[in-house]
Image (tube, rainbow, N blue to C red; front, side, top):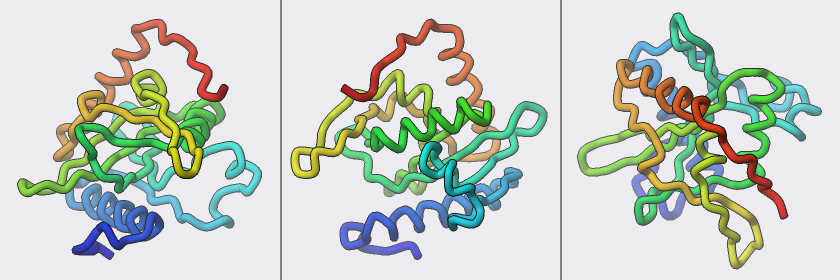
Length: 178
């Protein structure tokens, strides 16, 4: 469902397009993954109220399984955005399942597609809270410099560098809601 005019695409269409494109990218790069069906029967309803449902489980062979959510948001002035409630639910997923949760943002440029990945914990640590003036919705802005650019299978190992760097620090506990 790749649209030529992304400005006319709805949020749902852009999200579906991002999932399809990440699915294709994972397959083309020979990365082992499981796609999570996005219907209410595939994810316990009570969990859906508390936890973020990932789009994929990605197997990093010999290391771990990662929960991954595809994002198809525009890079704006060097920043990506992330909904506060979505981040809270991703952190809840990590706490409940003990599985690292990652967001993979698609960025399309003249030189091609790049996936920028950030762990939910890193987003919590690095994000700056903002409020949408129209809707009142809280969201985080996160500098692209906080993300890891993943272009191919060999770049996947970079993800553990970001997580291990966070684990080595004492991350201040932030209260996301006022």
